[in-house]
Length: 249
Image (tube, rainbow, N blue to C red; front, side, top):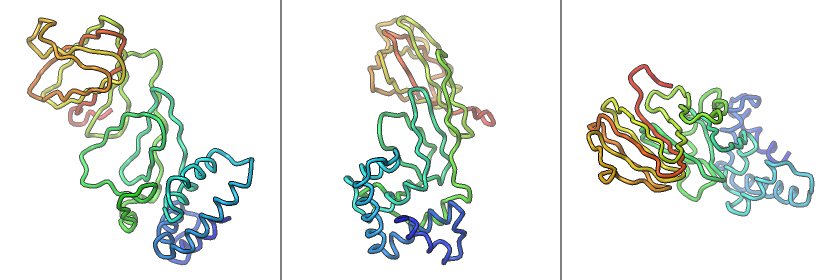
């Protein structure tokens, strides 16, 4: 009810109070147009939930975030209009452009296409450009289903509609080798676990290999047609490449 008191503005401005986009924009507008009321309502909700013992996970997350951000932060109220997604190891989610999202806990690999902006709206102390969300937020602001990487598949490509990149995950056993062809397109490698050696095309001597330790990355230039990877211990590698035209997966 404390958040609902902030939502009539969505209908008053000509929006549909049942439409998720209008509700979301209504909260954003209220956080700037009437910041006093916004802070009051967020504070009332915080105080009520602190006095209760049967809150759900979203309410518990709200209280934790209240300790990190001021009550004027729009993200605190918008939290109740968003989907909380808990990913386990190997899972992924695809978010189209214009979908508000917040990464809150854990470690993940994120890949983005070239962009001229990252627009913030809340849960941050950086600049928040709320006005531009009227242009960015789609009519049906929903992400894609969670993408699962089947186990124990050692080579898995996450299938998304992105045309700019394709993400592979590889699981290596000690001593395992793989050769990759770049197609004269740039690639990025990120080692999450283990230790690998990379041999550029034409180098056969293991002593000439470049080593990659856990947490490090390689940029493979398009001028390198092929390369080989040798695993020095059990490893998990993410590889991002540019698919051929029309070959997004």
